[in-house]
Image 1 (tube, rainbow, N blue to C red):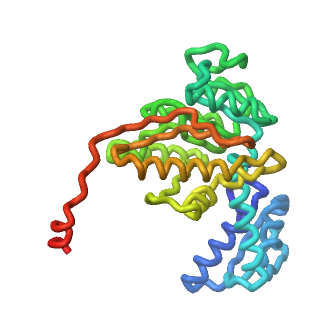
Image 2 (image 1 turned 45 degrees about the vertical axis):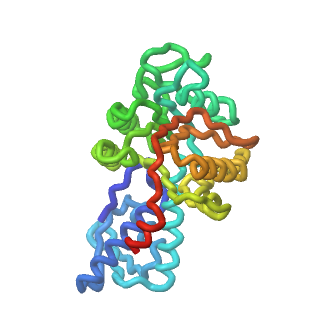
Length: 316
């Protein structure tokens, strides 16, 4: 018996989780015991069995190691599996929270643009690894050598930040997968949040990420105005990437209070001006010293007049 786990994901508890899930499925179908044959040199597989928490019986038979264990989980095994699942979940977020290298695809030479500001902030806010700008139309971006595609980057890339038109995102994501990128942050808009037109595009993006085993962050937290202080707090803390704002692994903590205040201010503005039909602040840079909205787009239209009180009474 052997488990096929990619080299990049070994040592993160996935083997133990797979054994546990297989045992649970077997137990539900009336299989009470597993017997496995393991090559003598496969020490890591044997270690997975020993650390699983199952009462394992190990013996030798014709040059192979024979392993037998029941499919029901003991309390010890359940505790171990819960710890392993937590470890695996944290490891899955490593690409976002502690990347060793970052590529900004769509990095711009011009400050004040989304691609320009994302790249500038990564370079100037204390990130210690290499930051690679990817721009097919530039040889240098903000004094850093640029690359035409993510595949041209000479070193490994843990995290790719995608800032290109929505129509190009899926192709760029596939290039990232072929490069071996572990995680994607897609800043580009125009997906499911854009309505019917963007849903197929989002589906294709998810398919590509699953094909290459890449993690995708498009955190969404929704509230309806008017917003309260509690709404703003919950919106920020419900994001999967919130730990990054708290100063992950020694990095300076971001000004979360300023972000919550900005959310409340935007909510108040929308409430005070019903002619605002759409407001897109993208991206919002949360720094240790405050919050910066790099780009904002507002669409206004005539507000819908409320029904007269008499009409509302008749409807009621």
